Amino acid sequence: MKAPDTTKARVLVVGDVMLDRYWYGDASRISPEAPVPVLLFREEEYRLGGAANVAANCAALGAKTTLLSVVGKDDAGSRLARMLKGEKVDARLHRDGRVHTTQKLRIIGRRQQLLRIDMEAPPSSEVLAAKLAEFREALAACDVVLLSDYGKGGLAHIETMIREGRKARKIVLVDPKGDDYARYRGATVVTPNLGELRDVVGTWKDEKDLAARVEGLRRKLRLDALLLTRGESGMTLFRHRRKIQVKAERHEVSDVTGAGDTVIATLAVMLAAGEGLESAVRIANRAGGIKVTKFGTAVVTPAEIFGR
Image (tube, rainbow, N blue to C red; front, side, top):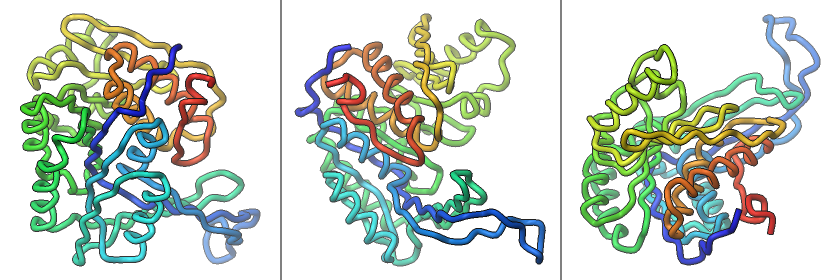
């Protein structure tokens, strides 16, 4: 697989950023107060989550990456900004004093997740309006728009962003959330996983039924394509009246957290670098396979994908 030149690729990522926190420790005994494990705390680690992880993956692949999002006026928001700068992401984070930065705290004992604690609140309409204005300014300087929807409220204007992105002749990719895809109408490619697609089109009987349901959805939403990620079964790219199945590469799975982020980030960078859609999907499939060998959210590099 030949490595494309990604140094001139320009990706604009918009979406919900999160600070992923990990508490590691030993959980070798049960509490006498309740039937729950007791974690003897050892250390804490911070990682980029959500759209921040998507942007970091784009930058790690060599693309000039701009990120638009909203954080709170808090320590978590400041930490995210510093971490993104370290990953060479041009992060344009709007601060909203009325919310806390979204955080996911995972409690890990013996490399197993014991508990996850989420801290989140939707941003205000005023901050979202300001972000939309900056989106319009940033649009001209990108090749691909990547909308990373985690359902946290940061993409309230996604219909407008898709419409204006396509009008400006940009490729628009959407990582979807929820059971109503009407808001993604007109995007170039939408990338649901199996569970997400089932919530939208219902349960299918077989592959033929699946293809018919996806074609109906694709035509209804006027999508160029739909990329279905299927875990250990690889991916299926659905285009007009045809589909392409890409088998997953065999790897020992450590953690699937953030695999979808890596897939859509790789797809965006490869398309921005001039790869065709089918070729970009195959490269993204390889990147996703590499990511699941790593614990937690993580980036994948060109050297890992292309062996250089």
